[in-house]
Image (cartoon, rainbow, N blue to C red; front, side):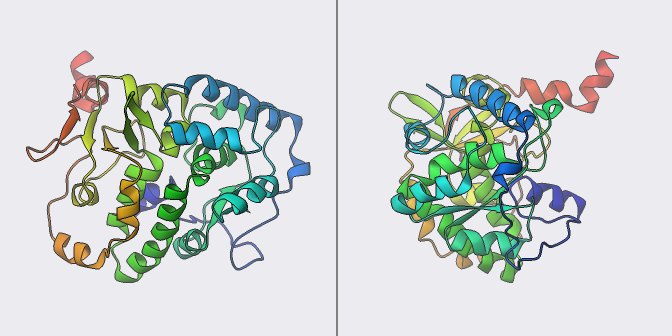
Length: 302
């Protein structure tokens, strides 16, 4: 149960021990005027660092989304101002939540084109890692891609699918699809591999690791393979799955997952770094980074 909670926590699928707010949909007022100068300064530090890293590493759609939104280094964005742009472009809006929310609440928001974003921002000593998604991860990492019609439709479909998967008791397999696309997905552009996943785009260290390091595997995205693959919540990913084009997500948005769940029941589960003979390998990783951190490696160095 603890591991399941950790796995869901990184992308908003668990409420932990948080008490429900007054509104049944868990939304709260962003309280933009309550942000302190220190909090705006943390946003500025994170924004400027990532903005320098993403050109040539993030996909074209992410860069265009950043350009089209009222988002900059000066201050934490106002959700309502962002929502005005999104409503006109793709019908989405950003709603503030206190942090992690229950599964059904999270999926219900997505299914209705509402993106639940944490309203708090990390502390200055937490710049490089925060397990619970904050306003920087949610807004900087996710919202630019919601300007894109393909991503907008895909995430809505994911919300609808999540409600069904929860009823069927197969949420873990669908969560892996979200993880390896919306959070940690790569896409092949004519000029090279690019980031579209928010978990990478909002992380300075993983931005470099995902597209440049020789350690991780980069494997062509295949739906059933992804649904059978565990992922890392405590460190960089050992494997990234690569789309040939973002339009492939439109196909996923219209798939009936019920037969897949039945077919995969009792099927093998693969560890995060596994490479199969049937995989289309874009880059076969050395595994160097994670191998050096395993307990047996640490004992050998002692």
